[in-house]
Length: 277
Image (tube, rainbow, N blue to C red):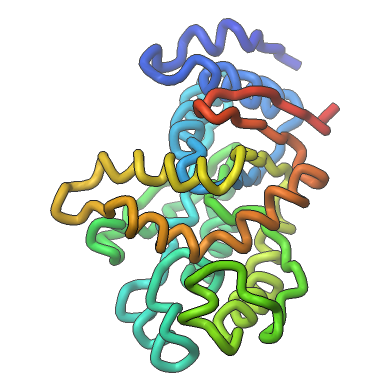
């Protein structure tokens, strides 16, 4: 079996990218060239750098003779019209994209199944500024490695019920009876966990805390057109939709993840803990 050197792979990656993320991408690609997983998940809080890492992984995999594709769970958000129907039928909070229930899991499952095989695959694209789907892109399989990245990738249900106490202002004021958080929990267990079970490996980007998520999410807004950009208060409200699952993942996912990437407050990689031989 051909072997590869991570340092040489890293040296060929985008020099403008953070060096620790280049090193991480190279290390993962070299390991995957050896172990040959077919589907890998990357989970972690908003702003953790999943998209940056994904872009570097595609390039690093090319250096180790793997044809890889990274798909984002965010591109599989339901359309704005579909979420409005959910808001009317189930709970008003489902109009806001993000939590389990607001993704087209059927389309995502189809993509995960199809991409390792020959043939054309249509992949959705979601414009966060427009808060809606835009035209699909088409790619040609097969891919040696399919990487799914997203904030909740790998999350597990945590026993949340309608009588589970609220943890933030959003839940206290807009979900006083617990219907929304209980339904999010039910959909996570029913629809999302079976997707995670298809993954051969899980990489978890462990953010320091929720304050870092808010700060890094606000930094991401700088890349969005000013007219559609969220300010600090809006980001804080938005992150509350993700808070419960993010906190649960911080507590329990490192025990299960094949790779836990511990991030420092300055966004650098402080430690990489591998359970892969």
